[in-house]
Length: 405
Image (cartoon, rainbow, N blue to C red; front, side, top):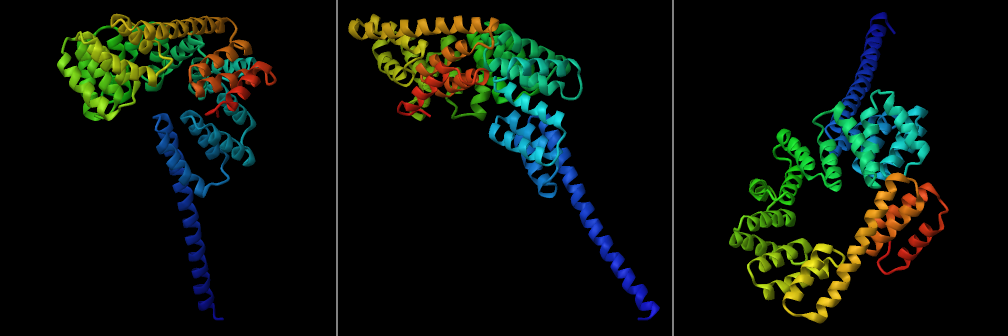
């Protein structure tokens, strides 16, 4: 081979190697782009977008512990616990930092309301030290506290979170939820209002604020919100009920009737719609017309206090004594359960890790047909004391019932 041919061959080999290197570098840059885009999407609470970018990233970096850890965090925050656990196992396989893995596993337990006293202390210490994970920790703590009705602890964590990010949408909406359950409706409405100031088309915030304004008997302020929502959510039963309640509170009964008749036709089995239709009939003085609506509502919501009480009042006014007595007993039963639930949640503030309290709360939820809530409370009792017999027995009894899961 001549020297000229050797030079040409060498040049071709080097060009080929350069092409391979460029391709590898290009794939690396694309993966890096998707990883950074996923982080940005997560900061904006756009979980679907974050998952999309992470899937692309992991196609190129299947053994990236950082990408798997980020995927676990996205899954946890979006409520996909199974995926979060799978991604954490993948991150461990890829050699992820043990401290980072420990933190994410504990955050997963905390967010579900299943953390132990030692885990709570660990997270509080981590938050006190500051650092880039402080917001993640405060979010998980606040969600976990709220999950088990530790409302004052949730409020404290959310307030700390909002000191770091004053206009964080998720924190404001969650704090509004906590304020509402602490019967601080004005504060709850203010937080929702702050969200809508920065996100004027945020449907969730508009709906919650409208409902709070109705609870505060500010129907005139609530009405524009529900009218706006109806444009973007014309088929929403919750929007129809809110709009009708605002109209009814302002004495615009014909408009309320029109909205509710359309909603009843579209959602014939929706308890809140049926209840509001019955209430409207009562307000217009036609209790005989209200009775079928309220009976249907009670059939759909057999453990709802407002539904049963409205039905009881209507039956008494119409002289339906036998049925009124039966419904009245149900009303008293529900009232007693609600009072007991209040006692249990108050006691839980002082003894947050009591499996007995959590077990009784779980049983009450199951009794009222709230299967998911009941099972979660029973599981949280077992997270504290894995062999706690009453919780295990309650789960077995639930699973043995028709429709049990």
